[in-house]
Figure 1 (cartoon, rainbow, N blue to C red):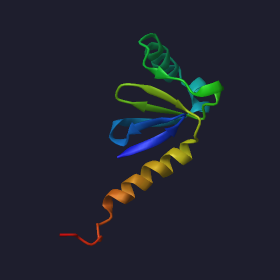
Figure 2 (figure 1 turned 180 degrees about the vertical axis):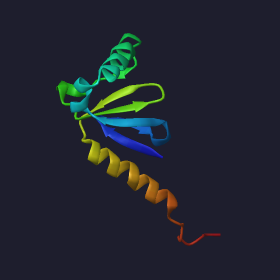
Figure 3 (figure 1 turned 180 degrees about the horizontal axis):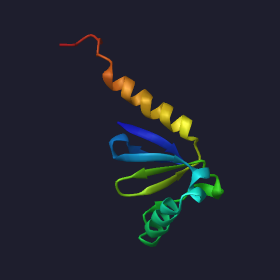
Length: 93
C-alpha cells in the first residue's frame, strides 16, 4: 500500500523505516549527520517553504513532510486496517 506524506509525495508503506518528529532532529547528532550525508548524496526531499513537521525515512530517501507524525501514523494504520478487511463484494460472472 501507499501513504500520502504531503507535498504531492506518495511513498510505499513497506519502504518506511521510521517517522520522526522534526523538532527532535536538533537533539540528536546522529540524525543530523545522517541527514547531512543524505543531502550530499541528493537523497533528501525537502518540504516546501520550511514547513516540515515530520521526517519520513525510507530505504532510499529522507522526506521532510508538512504533516505531523500523528497524522502520518493514522494514515499508515488506516492502510494496515484496510489490508486486513475481507472483501465481501459480490462477485460478477
